[in-house]
Length: 450
Image 1 (cartoon, one colour):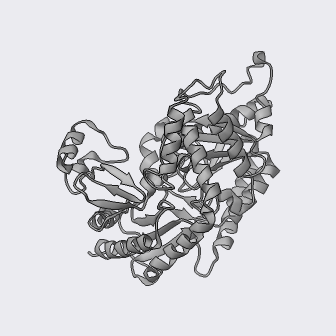
Image 2: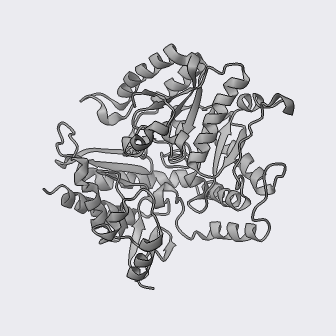
Image 3: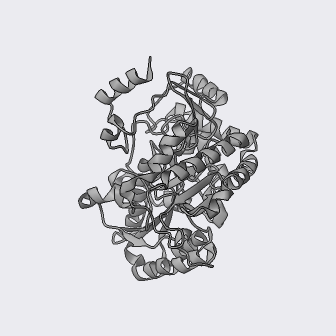
């Protein structure tokens, strides 16, 4: 098989996600991948690329990880799938117990879905239904943050605030209430991230004070708004938000689909705020990039609102065909085993430091408006004017120039607009991180040329 042969065939039959397909017929050709190993992806002609974005933020421990492969092979020999309504199996019980053990205290019940968007949808329905079961059907609105993103299904999309994804479908979406993001990119000169987050929280507090009687829940991405350009904020915001939600009787939904499992420097981002949300949505890293699986963890209080005789019709009648798939659960258990056995979070601290040091020289670059980092996620934002942080026009697609250059230098650096970011598998080496930084530096120099 040659690269070109597979690309030609694929363009006739495959509609790729998040893509203008016409691009692939010209300046941005498809990259066919034959195999993966560790941080490397390899095409059909032996070219290799460091997967610096973890294949859309899902891969934690490298491609073809032998320990995860073994868990899949073992589970396939025992049970591939069974309906989870009325039946149960050992992997789903084991995984539920393990997730309750490692997530913030008080999240004692685990509901299963297929992917991140599905988890968000389930959490929204649970929150609304909880209040309905408590005799408060008027609580039917949700609050999001500006620049947020929570998925592509209609409910999840409504909770987002990235116009590129949302505007086209606005007529189909429920209306939500939006509070300003604590995104530190917009802080005043000399203002700390913490001070800015506290200042931004005032608008959220006012919104909850005025409209809590009609609000089910606030939905947030703790610490990093990933699809919103890897914009980051201080954890104090969520500490204050938890207090306010308790004060006003509103649920807090933490979307840790992208930021969970070590991406922010702790196993879960909520840990840095010292909070337990009412709902925590997990996916992506849950199965280390192997299989679709997601969960919604929630509290006994939420669970008990649905626990009654069948005739009351209080049950949560929500399901997916592959809910709690045993193979997916086995992979997730292997993932948690690696975290437990290999001291992953501590090891990542050294890698995080290396990431910061490797791009520190870009802080003075005239077209770098911001370098930001939480743990194993680092972003460099290119701007037209550094002093004012004026962005390059989006139509110029300068981030794509970095991507194209990186492919010639053994790196996959898929940008978010004009934001170049690293979110690599945790098996990456410091030498490989320094290589990515050099490639990104070269790419930025090319991208900002007129």
